[in-house]
Length: 430
View 1: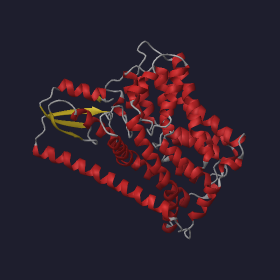
View 2 (view 1 turned 180 degrees about the vertical axis):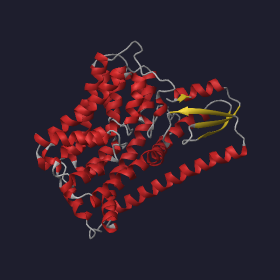
View 3 (view 1 turned 135 degrees about the vertical axis):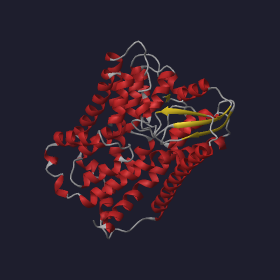
View 4 (view 1 turned 30 degrees about the vertical axis):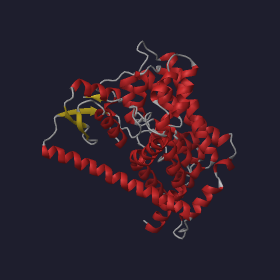
């Protein structure tokens, strides 16, 4: 493998995305501080088109992945959101997000950036109304059990509601910055790096001729893309550089759009969890809505919209940076890339430090209660549970281990109160 070509491709993609990703993280932090789940749930109760459309509009800007959205949806449902609205939220949220929309614009141009939230809105509304019509039950909510959110591999904001109301304006802004540039980076950083590396590898290793034959059969290519995207776990932002690389190798923009929409929304883990929590019929509608909408918009892009919209000058300019001689990086994007890499490294070190801290507590045997929690798989999940437990009266210290799912609580606190705090945060106790 030509390492110079690989690193040139990787750095070129990072430079294109980093300013917009950082902006998206900041907006995500502001949404976390100023948009509260309890306020959202008031708009999502009841039947009809209104709650379903509102749920989609609420979900589109939130930077959550397909399984990260599950605990949040559970929390909304427990506060009274209808099953149709919950389904709409589940469909729209992982497909987009302010960070992914900004990054889509940076690499793929304005038409892609506009079509992603539009497709998410259409698919979510269609799926939510179909569930309301054909899959509502008496409970009117997503029910969870030990088998429910247990398999989730969440990496976004997860259901618990942090209290920012007592903070000053400056305090809220600082909290937004911390959430965006620390918690969000820890949440999506791993999958973003995987997406960037895979994109660079595709650029360097995959011959251009491989995808040219599929270009003549768009429906077949979209079907293949769905078969590849569903088992592959990738977030809405991480899918963008992969889609760009596939387009540069000859796949049509419509096929790339299928990856952008189906990949983040319908991986096997989230489908299995939804099957247990919502039932087979509602889950089938969920998956069908994601696939049908992605394919429909993919065909729209390939056959009805101007081809020039989907080969913007930015994309072509970026393609020129893929060669080994393309080591030309503007100052501002490069500084943004350095900042993004620094935040990723800090998040990785912090996560490792927390893991060691937990191991030290085990060695000292100072824990009083250990609780096995199901549904955590990201740094923000861990932080959400830790904050919920630390807020309980009588708790002296809390350690939540992400890899084992075990929360260790020290202090004079009732186990029932611990379990209730975990439940209210959107998780379950095994």
